Image 1 (cartoon, one colour):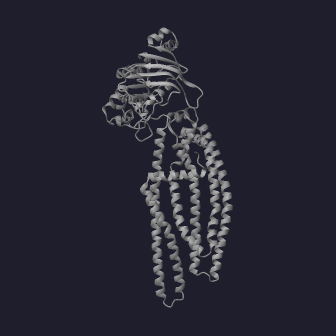
Image 2: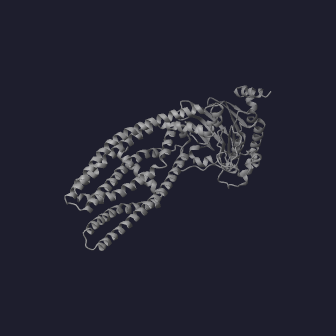
Length: 601
């Protein structure tokens, strides 16, 4: 059942308060205690000020000036104590607020990270997802804390306003009414502006992301070489300026409109306030109020106006923050589609009957083209197969389905006759070691880069060294300044950059370190020379003896080592067989093999 806008905001407000409480319960309790104390102290200070003024007025005609001054001095001392207490509470509140803010911000970032990792890979291929993530990242660092601080400010100011309002009613009910009315116009303006800004920001999320992307291209190493070689700097900077100029002008236009309306509202409020001051002065001149009363009521009205403005402004701020916080919860409420079943089946170990794809078809989200069409194949335990085909023929997509990063649109994939959807996805992926062609480059130590392949091992497990030796990375790593403890990449101090081929050797070692019964290599050695690649794969076939291996490569010198080869074209399997059988068939594989072999003759 859909909620009304008011109920939605109330629900978001409750979620935000709950989130802050879960993040920092101790700091939240301290904040609440300070709210109560800081709400009471202003009224105490105001009343003591009245007593001081009245005591001084009486002392002007008192026969014993020293006695009169003693009474005034005592009151001033008490007022000083309250002032010091207020200063102490203010300092403590600042400290508590900062600690709470930092704790909540870190917690919310952890929540976003956890959600990002939990969501399916399909989300990352959806522009709307990236818009949602961008908005969440914008709001997450400060909105929840601002909501709690706003609630704290409203509560603290409410305590003070209730006391000061009751005091002003003793003067005249109309003065208390003016106190409220004077602060109202500014709040209405803020609420209206918050709505306009919220809708504008949602409409311009794509433009904001484009400016971030252009900044990334200009300021990071992702495209640093090409930006310089193709002289793209001026072009990208021009586009960045154009996007930012458009966003800046639109936002300034909203701010100008707000300022003009706010000016009218504040002028009206100022006239109402001046009328109340005139009334208090009139009453004092005609003897209805003492000089102390004049000071007390004047300050009560002045402070009451300030506190009420804080309350209404806080309410407006809460409205604005909950409005924008919906961006965060829009992201957090996304649900993964690939989840573990209620009673997952146990992963077979060792594999007895192998992997089978039966009439599998797949279409990426938001795409009209089928990446795979009616694919059927079987991989026996311990068998080494190769997938061959042109770019875009569906080889990597097939591997993604096998790892259950996606589920087939049609058909089934089974492991030992059990559908992959009956296993826990995490447990299934632990049985598969993969190196994709777009492998990650972690700017950590060489040892950690390999260890990430199986973090269940100790960070200094001897299998890390064995994996590096198997991939050919060991010789390169031992030449680094700190060997396996050398940080790779240039993002951090004392980091060492590697060539593309050396990074590939690290990625291979990461795959080899995991003791998985299924190993997949998706173009992992494209940057290696032919001799090095052949040596790696020859060693790979030795290491993978008894394990199921899937190899994707454009180099037929390595593909021919496989037990069985599947040739894909436009998402379907068009040929299958051993290297010798496929050459004998004289089809697509044979033509591609001859084309590649001819370039070496």
